[in-house]
Image (cartoon, rainbow, N blue to C red; front, side, top):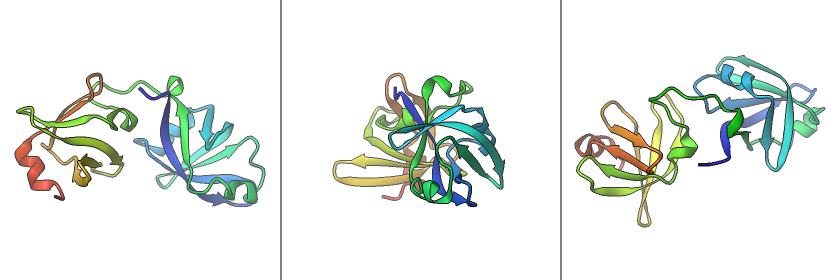
Length: 166
């Protein structure tokens, strides 16, 4: 398990006082209000304020006092310590825990390894098969189970082949 979880990506500075606009990688921008500190790059920042609007979150961080300082954070990932992360419902997992899992069919056939998950209304999974990448949406009926303890994501082979970009 990873010590840190990616919860957002810095999009741009917001205004002239150092606030940053971030794209949440959580279920809701409101989730970011729960964190007292974040890690961006190699620097830990105390969260002074957080507001959510229009699906985005706006963070004010200690040490980021103006637009120039905020500009240096553009494009970087916002991480939090796993110990600060909320417990998930039983049927949910953190993306960081899925990366590196083996993708197998219900019959046990190895299809590849999960290398990325792009958050969207329907998450887009990327798997590596040798030197080739295959992408597929986590549409209804594709993913049967996710076992992060054993590093296995099980899919319905027929449904996977219908939606995968082979």
